[in-house]
Image (cartoon, rainbow, N blue to C red; front, side):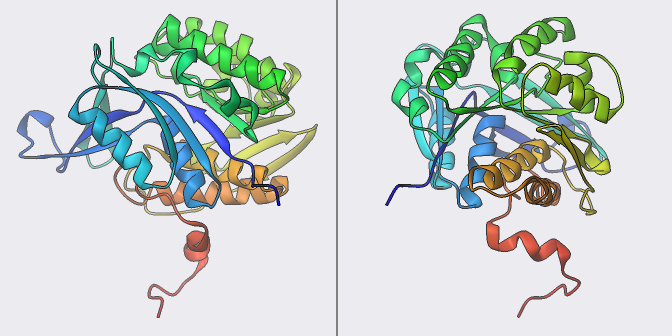
Length: 316
C-alpha cells in the first residue's frame, strides 16, 4: 500500500515575543514567548488536518533555534533543520497597540533563516513530495534565499511535483516593485497561487477580485485563489469560478489566518477533494486562526471543523 503524499515546505521560522496586554510595548509588564513563520504555520495546519508535512529551515545555534525546532516537531511535522553556528535565529515582536490593531516588528536581518541554501533541502524530498508549498516571504529575505526558492520550484517542476505559491507580501522586507518582478517570474512556474487582493494587485495590477484571479491564471497557474478576509474568497480553477463566504467569528488575532486558509485548502487538494470542499475547509481553518492569539495555536484538527457550525456552546 502506497504511503499518502506529503507536502514539503521551507522557509524562515522565528521566535515570537508577544505583549500580553493592550498598550505601548514600552509599558508591557511581561511578554510571552513562542514561534511563528508562514511556511511552518502551513505545515502545522496540514499536520493537524491529517496530512503529513515536512518543513525545512535554518536556525541559529541558540536557545531560540531550539525552541523553533521543538515546537514544530511537537506538532508532528517532520522537521529537517540546519543549525547555523554563525548567525542568530530571527525574532519578531507583536505589540497590541489597541484592542483592534497590532504592530509586528522583525529582527531578522542576517538571521540564520535568511541564509537558507539549496543544500538545506534534499532533492529527493522534493521529488517524492505530493506538493511543494513556497511563500513570497522567502525571496524577500536575501538573494541566497531567493536562489533557494528558485531551485526548489525548478526541481519540483522537473519531477512533475505540484507547486503552490502564496505571494505573502511583506512591505518591511522589500518594495512592491521588487516583489512584482519576482512574483511575475514565479507565478508562471506554479500550479496553485494564493494571494490577498492587495497582493495580487502588486503582481498583476489593480482590479476587482475576479479580474485579479483571471490575470494570475493567464500567467499559467491552473488555480488562482484570492483571499478576501471577512469577504470570504474566490478561486478560478481550470477556468471555472468558485466563491466562498467567510465564517463569521469574534476576531481576537488575525495573524496566521492566511496561513491557516492555505493549509485548509491544500489539505483538501492533496487528498482529492473538489474545489468547493477546498474553499469551505479553508474558510473554516482561517476563521479558527482568528479566535485565539498567536500565529498557529488556534489552527483546528479535522474533527473540530464542524464546531463553528454548531449552536450548542457545550459538547457533552
